[in-house]
Length: 92
Image (cartoon, rainbow, N blue to C red; front, side):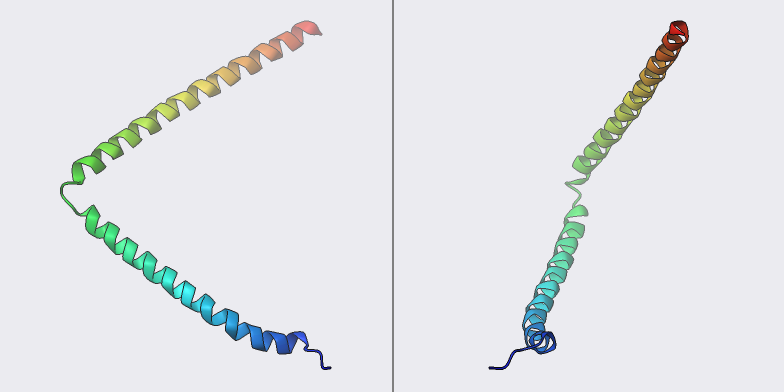
């Protein structure tokens, strides 16, 4: 009984695994391109423009609120750190 080495197994299995892998990859690339084209086409729809603008405005408002909350959090952290430092000095 002969044993197959890794090079022989690789030469047999490689093309079998490689061809379906290439086909799946090509399918995914085509699907990506079709979806991109569809989104580009729908994105130019004038009826969607107000909705997209409203979503952008909401996103900008949310970003502004997040920035304000981050500033408040930084301030609170500084106040807590300063309070701890003053308590540590009193304790010495």
